[in-house]
Image (cartoon, rainbow, N blue to C red):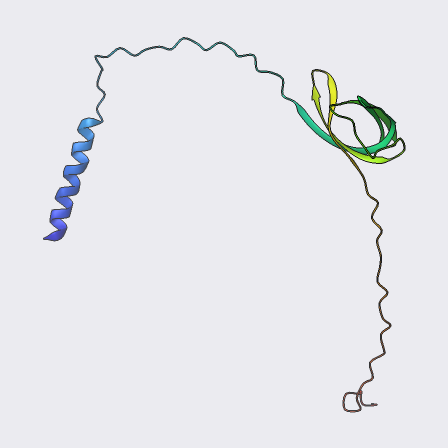
Length: 138
């Protein structure tokens, strides 16, 4: 009896949804939006980071040389503020953005050479086999 009730209720639900799914024409006209004008977005700033050796430095610019695949390349960057504690010949990491055809350094940090210290491993003593575990002489 319960199955019959569930079957009838399910069929009524399916038939009632099919009534609303029929194609009806609306009396309200559809508003057409005019095509949107293509907006001219400003050119995105490209953020880049690389490591090289300082060739020249002043309060307003820094010139860094790097080697890529055997080719040496010198790049010049405009500085927003003077960089302290960096001299010509230092190895630095430069983070910069390309904006309006200019390279503008956002961060210049010196590269610190890390010394790798290997700890000497203590010599191992050879393991001595106990007489119980020695192979028998056959």
